[in-house]
Image 1 (cartoon, helix red, strand yellow):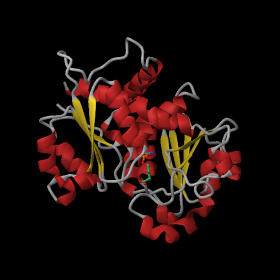
Image 2: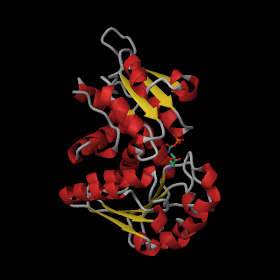
Image 3: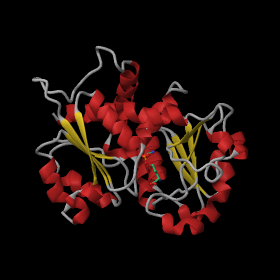
Image 4: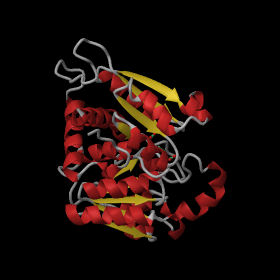
Length: 315
Ligand code: CP
Ligand code: NVA
């Protein structure tokens, strides 16, 4: 059966660990003669991966295009607005046309139900490259980054401050729980995580030895954290609500006082793009504990690993 990554918990804890191990291996062996090219057919033909965008992107577009190329394939990057999808052709019909010609479909869109609809009909792996609800590729890259600073993920405290209701918060809850981490979300009451996601993450954490917690107290959330993460206060599609969103989120900024509450060697993450002086202080983003450029690079390695793994398992 075909495997997809529509949300973080499409992988089991063991499977997530396999993908992360492969990501580290691919990073170390990049450009060597031994680097695998699973997207090159036996006769030398390059298989194609469709990478569709209904929302803007820099990192995701770049890393999938580069990654598919490095795996021996050819990326076909399509802007939703320039395709019939943008004019109302159904997700299902689009998928049925694509899956006969490409090896995998990567999609950034709005509602998670659209991603689920694609995965329900696709005969090739579907990868969520961000929806309003989840951003699982980013969290794989983030976990790879944390592993570059810690011997293991299980037992670490992963704290996220800011908009607790967005895609990053939800994917940190699920992905962090899978990894056996203690995931803390600090956000205002009005920006708290989807209760269904919090509950699902709690179930996963109960199996992996991790835990999940939401708190409205930003100091309590940051206290002793091994990882301190944040994200924009205004996600794509929320631009009209800018002013109303920013004011209540100010106390949840990842600034010097917040960093001082975390562990001395805490790793700072931000999926980018970042807004210095808003959700993160410039001195923190550009400071010695920030791993954000490695994090952005690791999108490449984590996604190469993910595509390799999904194709292998869908065989
Ligand atoms: N972090 C991330 O997904 O960045 P882009 O929106 O630039 O792809
Ligand atoms: N939460 C942000 C992430 C961007 C990569 C957004 O959805 O815009």
